[in-house]
Length: 128
Figure 1 (cartoon, rainbow, N blue to C red):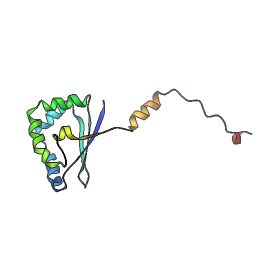
Figure 2 (cartoon, rainbow, N blue to C red):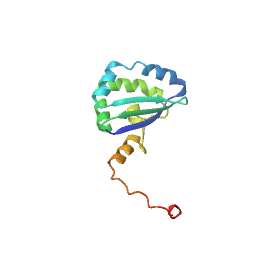
Figure 3 (tube, one colour):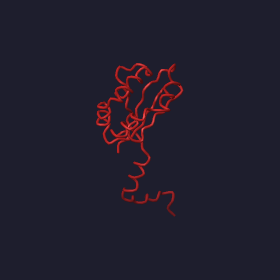
Figure 4 (cartoon, helix red, strand yellow):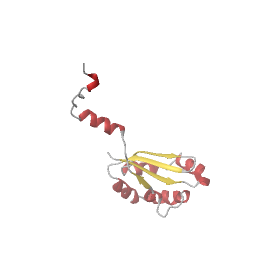
């Protein structure tokens, strides 16, 4: 299942309230996220307001479209929009998605399925 990572910038003067709001997300919002394909969803906040989100989903566009069809998402996004800097779209549409460049388990799995390689040829200094 594809992994998605994104960033947003939380206003420094609103960081404490942003954290407080996410300590008790509305149950209806939690269920909607899960039911529309947002799995293993986490948010991380750095002291300068950089917000990093991570989730696993079969299809990000479909997960976003599913949330867009819910009333709870419209209410949540309207309330959260004021927490972000330089955002012209609702937060769930205006984030910067990052490209994945490394994943340990993928590379380990590739090693496990790769044919065994020939041992390296002896170097001249190793010959008798």
